Amino acid sequence: MTKLSIIAPIYNEEDNVKPLCERLFEVLKDLGHTFEIIMVNDGSTDTSMDKLTEQSALRPELKVVDLRRNYGQTAAMMAGIDHANGEIIIPIDGDLQNDPADIPRLLEKLDEGYDVVSGWRRDRKDAAIRRNFVSRVANRIISLVSGVHLHDYGCSLKAYRREVVKDVKLYGEMHRFIPIYATWLGARVTEIPVTHHPRIHGTSKYGLNRIFKVVLDIIVIRFLDRYFTKPIHLFGGFGILSILISILSGMYMIYLKIFEGIAMILTPLPLLTVITLLIGIMSILMGLLAEMIVRTYFESQQKSTYLLRNVLNNDGTS
Ligand code: UDP
Ligand code: MG
Image 1 (cartoon, rainbow, N blue to C red):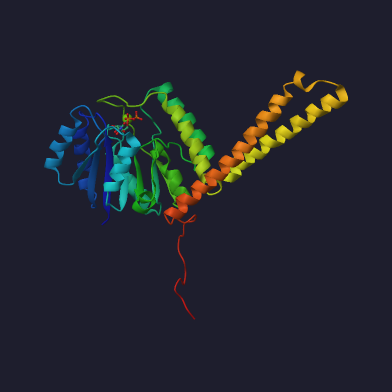
Image 2 (tube, rainbow, N blue to C red):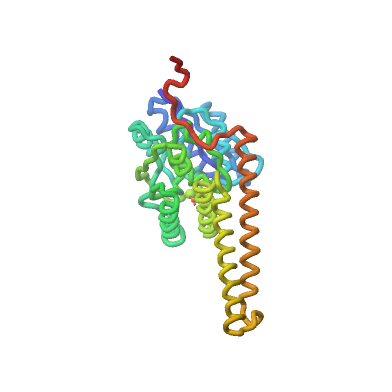
């Protein structure tokens, strides 16, 4: 018997709290696992917290974590994970758009030997262009850039083995990238289609500006993946390129002056030469700074730059 931790962030979902609890309990009580449900009130300004208090009095398996203000879905999920002690962690939206009835299927898939099973809202019930189209494009890009191929990173409903999320630290709005982090940590990741319902109560908390945030997050992910332990290769590479441009532009400027008799000042080349030289030098210096920061990060926390799966005959002597 494994223990499940279901985590639902709640931000102004007053009409959803009770039905969500009921649906979750209905599904979970027949599963034959022990479970806890952790609802994180992310600074709701409506009566969500009263509803949560009410439910928690009725159901001992419901843990309510009340944040002091609104921190956003990622932080709320992180708070939930920090309070979870199940071996399997299942985040789910607090607005009933995910269907608790999919939980048993996620678990079956985990049992096949996966560490992360991601939900895929194949038939997504949100605004067609504004949400679905944009998210499809975003998902394609994330899949290309990260090299971890899923159809739907944004779906909250996923199932994780505890080990893969406990070491993950989430910043900004990075919760949709947990499967990517997990893959880097050596986890086996897969996905299954899940049901998606239209929102019945309350409103979506996100608008179109989410697309920019996701793009920026992808850049961060890509940077962390490839250069976190060697930032000078990125900064320095760019710096060298810039200095090369500066040298070429400088040589051309001198060539024009000597052989064509064109005064340097008549071309934009002096400006280009100086600016690219400065940018190049600054980039290399920033790369050095970044190298120092990385060393502080790893050495001050005794973190290692690699992760072990196992060591055979670790304490063997002969
Ligand atoms: N949410 C949250 N804090 C926020 C915004 C959202 O805890 O600042 C929760 C919200 O209550 C819901 C989930 O995150 O349970 C997903 O939010 P929403 O339904 O607005 O996103 P969408 O389904 O439109 O992508
Ligand atoms: Mg929703």
